[in-house]
Amino acid sequence: VIAKAEVKGLVREAQSEAFLEMLEGVDIGADSATFSRTLSATLQIARRYRLSAYDASYLELAMREGLPLATLNEDLQKAANKAGLMRFPIS
Image (spheres, rainbow, N blue to C red):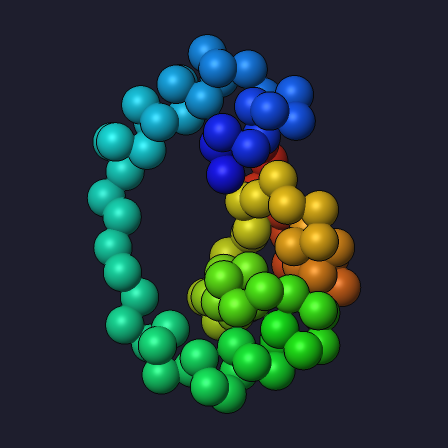
């Protein structure tokens, strides 16, 4: 995703490096409930918003947890807006 954003000119390499440094300091964990929802809620979200399974799982998690979505993906941004989610500001 980062490399694609750089190719599209959405971010500069220096911004990507700063973002990766920030991520290294974040305690990221796996969500065990995502797998159990794959064949139900995530599939319905993928169908409703015409998303890939990957994007739908990301949207499902944000919806379930009530969290803003951080993405540069335009289709995912549109789906999040339709679902009533806030977008996490990305500079």
